[in-house]
Amino acid sequence: MVYLLPTVTDPTIPHAFAYPTAYGDLISAILAMLSVVALHYRKRYAIILVWIFNIFGFLDLLLATFTANQLKLLGYNLGAAWFIPAFVVPFLLVTHIAIFWVLVKRGKEAKTESV
Image (cartoon, rainbow, N blue to C red; front, side, top):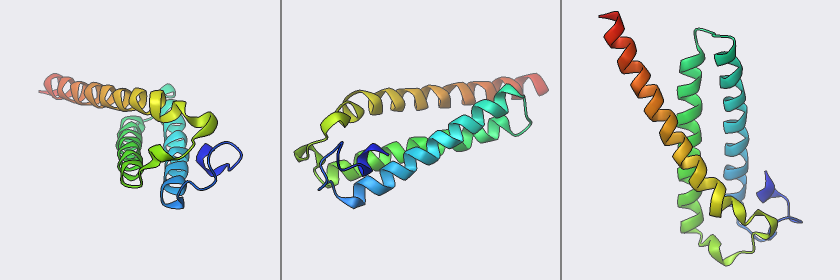
């Protein structure tokens, strides 16, 4: 949501980047928290919720990265939010890929056990 705060970042950052990125991140965070709670309580739908979170979050990051490149956001002053594209986005991309790997591996193991 930091991209929507003109006192933190450049107020001229295009809305075509700021709004989808901010709300996509908010939805991803809510899905992540719901996934953690569902996994903790071992709900039947927990793995499906993790898949939904991971797909949505990964696509949100890819869309934000693509949009930032299209709009040439490197020319804008990100202020206190400079660390998000520099450190957080790469870390989250690696995390999403690791979650995909665990989900696929777990799915293969579950198929092997049921046969």
